Amino acid sequence: MKIKSLKWIVSILAFVLVCASALTFSKDQASAASVYMKVVVNSNDTLNVRSGAGVKYKVVTKLKRNTVVTRTKTSNGWSKITYNKKTGWVNTKYLKKVVVKAAAKPLANFTFVVDAGHGGSDRGAFYYNVKEKDVNLKAAKELQKQLVAKGATVVMTRTKDVFPSLEARVKKSKKQNLMLILAFTTTQVKLATKQIKVI
Ligand SMILES: [Zn+2]
Image (cartoon, rainbow, N blue to C red; front, side, top):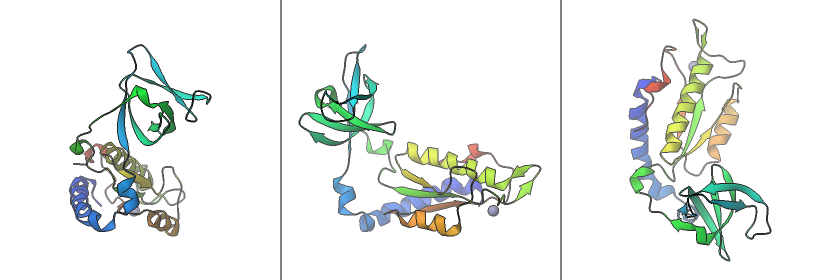
């Protein structure tokens, strides 16, 4: 597929998904909606993130004032939060709910499966020392980055130079509740990942 046309495809598919989502969302997903919280400590202070809900648990990481975290659970004055892929517990009194504009994360609750074609011993097309498998992976990663920035959950069929079988790729896709597969395969090797833009 031509990368240039990707933004159109993504926008069309996102639209299709909006239509389809009402049918496919499970009740679990809807009720488990997490809340964005902001860290409210003094500017020079940090907030301890602990491995459990209490001061006796060890500190996993520390957060600065105004860091926005995702809260998934509360328990006895403590909040379970996720920040930068790290999960832990913080004292709820240092958190304040933030209102996130819906437009900022238009793809929240959407799951995309991004499949970079070829990989490993299967290099795909080859032109002037450029291997298709590498171009596909680069493009797939760029797309992943942009989808994540819009709030989407992205499952990559590969993130390295390996070759998952077609079966493995499909299996990965089937695990997802709401599925959209964006498969990359390139016929024109001369392309820039800059051209990918999720709108
Ligand atoms: Zn190909």
